[in-house]
Image 1: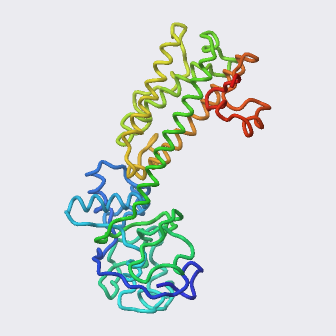
Image 2: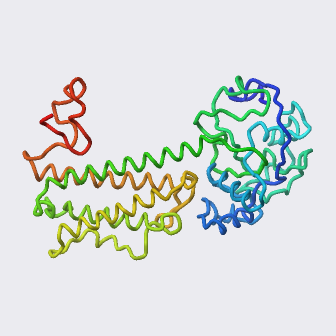
Image 3: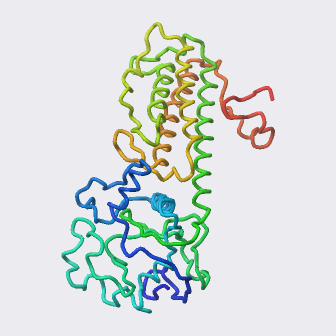
Length: 382
């Protein structure tokens, strides 16, 4: 494996043995992936509707590494056989075919010197299996589109990798393929690394923790307001705390209802009305909306599995991974909760009770009694 004339991360050249494995002869096509989308009711990846990429015999592109893993797991369940992504070592062995020591599956000639190279891939990938296979009967090895491997990318791994069945580094880093237009083949059999599930699980726990912290911060600020201040706008272009609460609640209900299966902008949401409060609206009613919205957020988060983090959802028809959608919600709610805190502090003025470390108290916090400080309120008597 490796190449002495290549990039630093391709060195050193080293000998590797891999156990026998089975390999799909072609890259997974749009037709193959469409069956997975229908069966799992998943959203399609980017470029799915682009005519340069959506021929049924084109390799499916634009999917994340996690989505490639989900496809393999789905195929395993459908067939009763174990399918997975290859390790990098397996992929290189398959790509080389019977050509040991050559730079490419076809030999040492640069790709742009091959017949017809200048006329291929002008607007997108080719349908699979149009060119001749390598000596193992495998098509499009090292051309058409990049392919995902099971390994995580870590510079310098070749210098320390084992000789037999290297699995790649367990460290979390950049993925082996850097370009967006990546596809997959299915290999069999080996269990995928546990660290991906662990990372996604940690991410979901952290999102819950941060959202609960933001909710608690807002509630600690609002608890200091009387009813009059709760509905007060400080100028004609500003929103009251009540309006901000109503907007957050409306957004949460829309975004997190049927989160994985429907667009985040629901047909029955009327966003402009979230910025209107009638004279008959009570504080209790507004806070009921608040609790209902957050209940929807947290019940959805509790239902998500680590493997869902890479799934695709849409917001106003724009594709997002679940991770992107959750990050978007976190940033949005944090922005408005910051406004709630600012308004509450402004309206309470000198009677405001700080929610974090008070001005001039940082050194006391570091050297004295950190238990007197907590997110949401500061106990000045401790």
